[in-house]
Image (cartoon, rainbow, N blue to C red; front, top):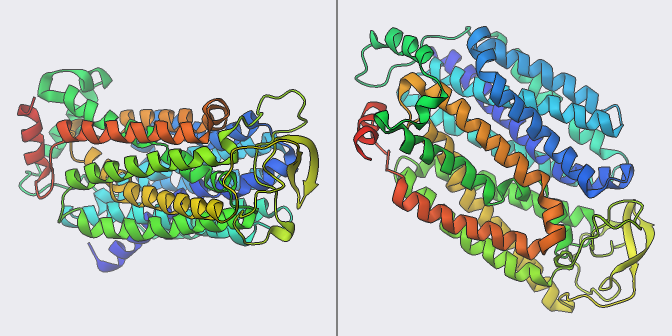
Length: 493
């Protein structure tokens, strides 16, 4: 392949990841403005956040057929058109339009992610495939960081959420132009030592397999499927989607006083995520997939449990009144905003340490007057707790970006036989998005039931279980050809 084609393929892959990450992360800050402007209840907030995932789930079910029938390049073009259309719908300015636009964008995102990975893998030689797969993940982290940065810069802008959603158009247009200069695709790339004559046989075999084959004992497929499901389910049940989608809300809840300070803390998470993902690019082929994944789960477990214990002192550890009938709109027991959204931590909780009673408006965000104490850290102690929680959140994001983030999709591309790799990827991806949807849609209401502390303790327990699962179930695939991995898994029952 010529260097210019390789460069364009890299650009298409990186831009696909960037748009994916941006659309995932932008709701974090936009939700604070949308909650106030549209007076959203907890269920409406969860539905709005989760609508993106509904679209992605639908695409994971139907997308494989679209990609196979119309080709990878055309599928990427379709995703570009859908993202542009969905972004326009989001700007209409009504709640139904927001949900419809997010579903459209979510559908396009999933189609784009699958198309980009398959397209690039077919365009490059095996020795460069790993780098470009990781490049896509790096694009996602840069997109999330860009989303958090836009959340911060537009946090005080009137209807800034429209700009937040609309800016996704720019990288989409660049990708749309770039893809036109690439060829339609090529035959599946061969792994080292794999004879080219086997491609046609493998493609013919793919038609004969169905999803039931993934659970058979033949070729040890049942174990491979269990490993694949473990990868995607554990990464969701450790709460990573909510750390991304509700980052600003979580930081507000544990004592970051203003919208701007909460969003700025989220930007710090994005920076950490980019740095650690780039580090993972270097370590994956040196240290190995298994050690990175197990150590990442262990660090996540410790930090999530620490956040759970520390957030027991936060205001949202109390009931959030999502279902209170006397409230006109949703309110959570958040600290009172500083005038002008000043960038300060909530050091004195003097006037905000009592349950909400009467609604007042301050800086466009609903807050409340108080009449009774809550268990919240006063004075300097509260600030120290906030900083510790921030550092733990950064450690969780770092551990995820080294372990679950890149390793999940790398391992899924390695553990299944070539004949069913695409079908298995799509099947596992359905569970990934379904679990993502479940975890995201229930976050606020579960927090209402067991508190923020209980949620993070639950996530920490899941991370412990994940580390144990991968220790006993996951083989090391570093430095092995796909054929060697396949042979090892066939006989490793």
